Length: 520
Image 1 (tube, helix red, strand yellow):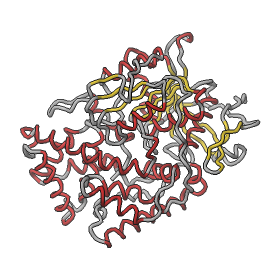
Image 2 (cartoon, rainbow, N blue to C red):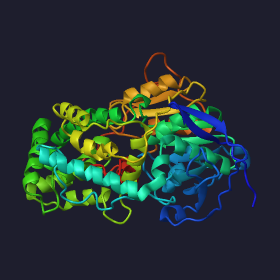
Image 3 (cartoon, helix red, strand yellow):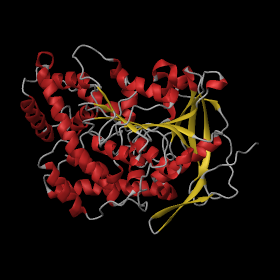
Image 4 (cartoon, one colour):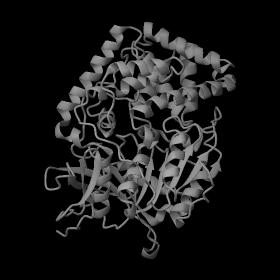
């Protein structure tokens, strides 16, 4: 079997500094391609395979793991071929195998010149091993997120510690090799296995951070790169989550105001503040008596969080909430919650891998007193998401994998990179996109002015999507403007109109991937 020599490097850490050293004598087995199983891939004639990589890139001859890969090949003549385009949907923990279909969303046929490659990162989805710790962790009617008593706080601390210990038992040695830099090394081995000198990359949300780190470590191997929903590299990951709490509280107020604007459709009232007060009153009511015995305050908070991430699905949530408030009908709320949560075997994979990456990418406070003080301080003015987010991340206090030191992102040697963000993105701040723009002097930033949707490109906003297509076709970016500003301004994804279904409303599977799966 022919072997392709990998140009990747081993990563070592000495006194917190990442060192890249050539992997002498390393070789990379080519991917053996075969048929896919996912229907959307089968329909498009995609091919699938497994890429074998070292568990520990510092020991390339040691234990191996396998990464699930998909590919939809370019359909242009050879002289128009633009190379491989790898996609990551975010998370961390998002499965990317099905995203080889993304190329067909690029306007003007610009996607046809690339091989679009989906990847389930290490530990995720169809990759081997795939980490799952407790498939029943996200059950109905969990303890109330807000720790209004020490007993309730201790219940959540015990649950969080128990999940971390379950992952320690299930993950073993894998837990020590789940940092962003490990996946970046995998990306480079995939590039080599595909026989490419340079990599094109499309990263949403956390995927934007993968792109930043890849461009820092391997700038000479970057061809074109689109980073949408840009992570602020200064705040990984504890501070980023605290920042999200404030931003999501702002965004859910925007949603409540939209509900008030459309009282004729949903009959929830004409004042956003009153609707917001009614929402918190419902949380307290459900805390006392869960609807149907299953929908408690946590479940209602879970489904509302999506409205702070995206304008997609605003009308579905509004209809479900209206029916619940008006007639006590919980079917719609339950269906929405079931759509982002499951207790099927392995259903916690995305959550387990979210923790596996975030808990070890950078140190988290191990003293719970720090968490308690920070979260109560933010909750006082931004209650919507604060404590659910805290408990989502709390297993990091007890996580078995040893934390590392984040890469100092430096895009000074990277080629032109396209950045995309909406002004009021709650998950990854616009300020973070400006920071990355500063660090990547050859980049340009498209801003969806005033928008609240996270990772919104290739979902029908032609102002944004046509610029993506132009960049992928020619490598040309919008002209870079002086100062710490965006370089191209577009209208954001529009707030929906009741009774009118937008094309982006069909983004269900996609938003379940970018939206942290199972997030309380």
